[in-house]
Length: 262
Ligand SMILES: C[S@@+](CC[C@H](N)C(=O)[O-])C[C@H]1O[C@@H](n2cnc3c(N)ncnc32)[C@H](O)[C@@H]1O
Image 1 (cartoon, helix red, strand yellow):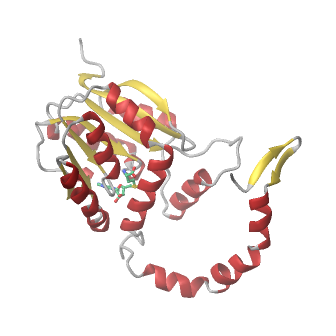
Image 2 (tube, protein in one colour):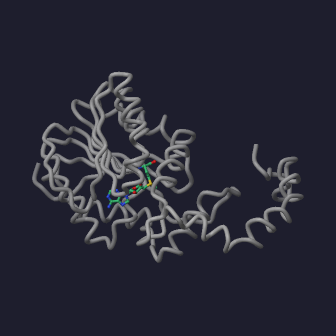
């Protein structure tokens, strides 16, 4: 149950919401009054160049995924009947990669830019070894992958494509995957787009919009994402709406080219 619920003329606080409102002075005391003291503590461990805690992003993202997304994402990937290795770019802790590989009985490889995320993925790799799933996670930048992977059948990229900008550059990066993964059949992109006017009170979309604005990033809209896939030469076979607000799965065909005679 959340903090608010619908009533006839809008929303009202639930019991939990009423309890939370009573605690607002405590939140203000610790998080407001001592904000700078907290910030100096928290900033140790963040990447000095970006201010981002890669390990926390990876772990929190995996937990949100496990709660809201992974069943749907597993269904989408299983429907493609994977016939080889699955490569997850920007894999975070690799938890989803492990879950998917186990479900479809295929090996996996993950890449993530953040050393802290790759460190957090060690537990996943250990768990995979224990249960007999072939998974490895490497540190690597999606925009500069150097190794070719002819054994990869499906490439996935979850909740990070909006970090690759502007559109022409992102299109060039996505196009380069055809060389890195020469036998892959599908590139499946999961991502969030900026919010439209929301019907429901919720926390994810305002946080997504606010954090990216603080980083001077402007995540692309759903239409812009689809145009960018076309510019990269991919045909979008399917679009699936996900349970996290404003989030979609796009299944892109890596074999047929946009504009090519079939
Ligand atoms: C929001 S998290 C999502 C993690 C995971 N895909 C998930 O869905 O739970 C974004 C991840 O993308 C990684 N990332 C961002 N830019 C990247 C790049 N250029 N190459 C590889 N990984 C990148 C970040 O380090 C982070 O772990």
